[in-house]
Image 1: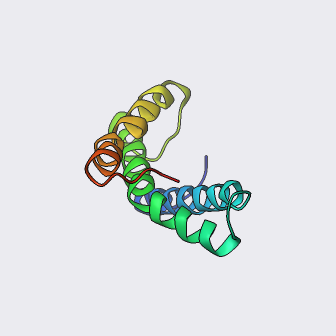
Image 2: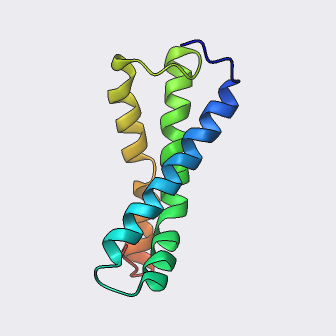
Length: 103
């Protein structure tokens, strides 16, 4: 693509963008049910661990299968499976052991 950034920089940017987008969307959705400040705090609390693990899994899968931060069509299904399944144990534990759901 002509981008001369190191793989780690591209992965870091993808992780930051994913987390910020998730927090913004969750805050928007939750603000319909609660105050904006409480919606923001809830979005941050339910998002950080799951989003970081999901983004890391997806980016590491991309690097492992393509040899770099090279997003191609055939790697996307593998990235989606990795991104979905990685935070499941944490989310399950949080829900069952702590009795805390997302909202």
